[in-house]
Length: 192
Image 1 (cartoon, one colour):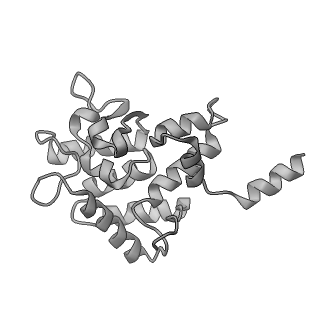
Image 2: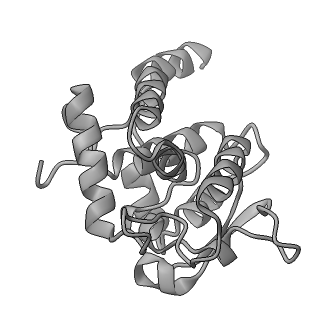
């Protein structure tokens, strides 16, 4: 797949990936990994480096936003990402199961922070198992960015907001992530 972009996921594929996560040895952890990818747009390295203080509020509850620190983000592109309700609920369940005494949210079998390569490998194995050709750990991120770009005007925002959520330094990079939609183009032309 070198040189090609990861495919974006359909809603059906998202649901299948979440079912797959639920069937593994660590269903709560795996569900959080999937949701961090498709509902927060995090990269595999950011998922691996996410710590509990980044998702907890001052009272120690799951916060309304992720405060991704520069040290956890690619090229020190830390950012604040509002917390999706599904992700928040999954984090509550994960915390109940594994606790938040260790710093890492996503832990390996040995209870240490999962490495970025292990997160990449988990997604690769999941997509392989599901038969999703062309998908990688970046598919959830591309899905997030494309969905956000399509909906941002309804939220009263702009592509700049999507750029900031993605942690991109350039709007050009954000645009490269966005998948076009043939049906939307047809509807747009018909509206002219």
